Amino acid sequence: MSDPYDCVVCLKPIEAAPDGKIRIEGIVKGETEWLWGPYPVHEPCRLNVRTIYDRLLGDGVHVARGFRARADDPETAELLSEWARADLGTPAKHWPGQWSRRKPPLDTPWPEFTYLADLSHAHLLGLVAKRGSREAPTGTAMAVHLAAAGKQVLLFTGYPPPLSRPTLVVDETPNPTPGLVDQALASVRPDLLVIERWERMHPDQPDGASRTSELENIGKVLKQTVLRHKLPCVVTTSLPQDMDLNRPLMHWAGHDSPAAIMTEFCSPLLVLRRSSPAEVLVRLELHTTMTDSTVRAVAWRG
Image (tube, rainbow, N blue to C red; front, side, top):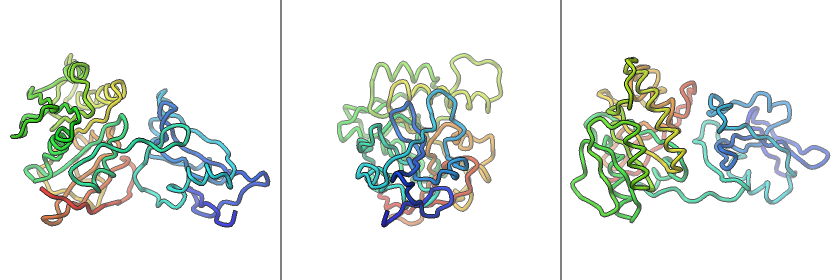
């Protein structure tokens, strides 16, 4: 290879084996989507691969996938072109099976944010902002925007938007349960589900557990529901303090806060803080144990 790929573990160039092949490793979900990678790695380095999805392996849905491919194969080059030079800690991207390009994500009012939210597949996107800020109702703004574009949207909120849309279904139940959400999804069959202030939710059958345990279980059920209905979901919460974008959320938000619990089932979790009238800083929380400080400046109106 005249232009070798770099190993995602040690960051050193990889030379093709005598048969012209290199090792590629990644994480797939349901054997149809690449969630992490695939990335090129040295054969010995594959034992040291660490991903943001490690804790999900073995759940019957997420699987580590490795194979060898010819380095000079055009398909290999296309597959790895976006990954080989990527900085560690960049947001996970999603590739469908057969190495083909995935469908574009659902649009948002902010083009740069559309890429970060990546509403192109069945997953939960978490949004955290300061209480009372202009970013706090971002979920509702996304719902209204997509409904105006003709997408079917189901929005759970205590503060319905002032403008109604034919394809926007608003549920104002004060304390919705996972069962209620599931029933509404089956009825509406939306392209997107948005749950504002998700901590308002209560279990279908309270069992006397602590509120933290209740929310943890609700998050797990929501994740299963979204995967079963095969649609993206946005869940939001707000905090009274300013958003600290210099440290991982778990280091300052409190382990029992709804925002911290979201790190267990949201991928990714985006923390928003206004930096100017026309710009919002977005920190990507990819894993509770990561110390990465990836912060993006996003042009923002409204």
